[in-house]
Length: 140
Image (cartoon, rainbow, N blue to C red; front, top):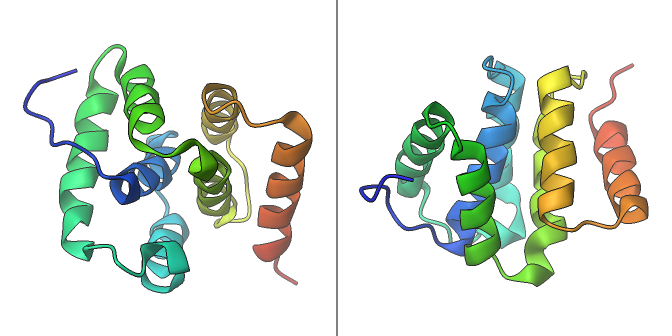
């Protein structure tokens, strides 16, 4: 990982995961970006977040994605920065972004599977989080 990448706060780590799942299929959709914005504006965990950090965090994620082992580096940063008690929160936020467009694309599914593994999310808990995200983003 490049030494010139900014350090991440726990809030930044959550934002980075949301951006990364959206960018994982190399085609961030408007609905996913709106879901990120809505989450930043309304989720209690982001009440104290400086929204001006969004650009720097986005640039960090994109820079990591350009590196050969960048996704692994991102997961390492997240594990290092985020308190373990928020690992399921990170997974839930990622699932919400992935579900925002009503479809789970292959690259997003692979990213979520790796995130689940990297954060050691219990499979039963992960299934509940995934079902909840799908339910929240269903349309008639």
